[in-house]
Length: 403
Image (tube, rainbow, N blue to C red; front, side, top):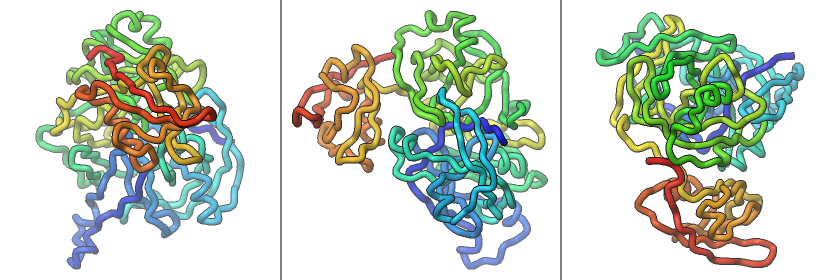
């Protein structure tokens, strides 16, 4: 039986990778040691195209928070993989995870292979619907990060993978030392409002900053973040993730100040967000402000501010969570008490068919979420369908947390 620390898994699209062989020029030794590939940032998660057993490409999330690479049960069935054993583990949700392990002969990004590996095959159907992803293929976890140096450049939407012996950090990069925990997850020193503690680095975490219960309660941080709201903040392996959302006055990684991030105070009673040996999780909402190189061999993360470093960190202004529906439209998964959606009469289970001028469907979901965060939008008409019929309502948006 094996146990995994398994972050939120998701994907939206498949993107083709680019290799030097496509140019018609012969590869040099440097080409083989260092290559750059397209990177998709979807819902604050990084995705790259992957070959599994010489088939693909498939879209996988790059996840420093996963102790093992993972594939979806749908992909396992497509590849006709036979389970080799069963296992259990924990995710960010509160429910225990059960899965079958399968054997992969090879997993690779371009010519960068992690070789043969046994991985969990996870049923992600419900997770994909709630988050809003139309497809899910898998996760590249610690195996790839431990073998190569990966540089994520979210601003340019690209990832560079290279052999450790050929890696040189950018001239302006800041060295951020880290340790590796028992799951080979990077752990750094950071501070919230002047309180220093250990934080895990999790590229699979969609949020900017998550504070675990023992830490934020010990320091009464729920009373120091200005205006806050309690809400469903995501969905991971094991179910929904609830938290109190606000914004601390100050946050820094080591000596590097970061613009005050949208912060989730975890309300989870079980799962990966209840650890007491660290303060919380630094997610992609913060990491995407940098070009970041992960050098596991030297236990250093190299950070260079990118063009998006000073971009505003926004949070939902509607007070509702929309996910995919089995019928036409988007399903209301959660409604914040006394929020704009609740005041507009929107209920959990409603099917939203139109938001503003946009038809509500899988293709428009992430555009709708962005619109419902935008400060310039004062109100928006919403059309909902329920057993009693179709109803139109006007939802007046508002800032739910301090700006």
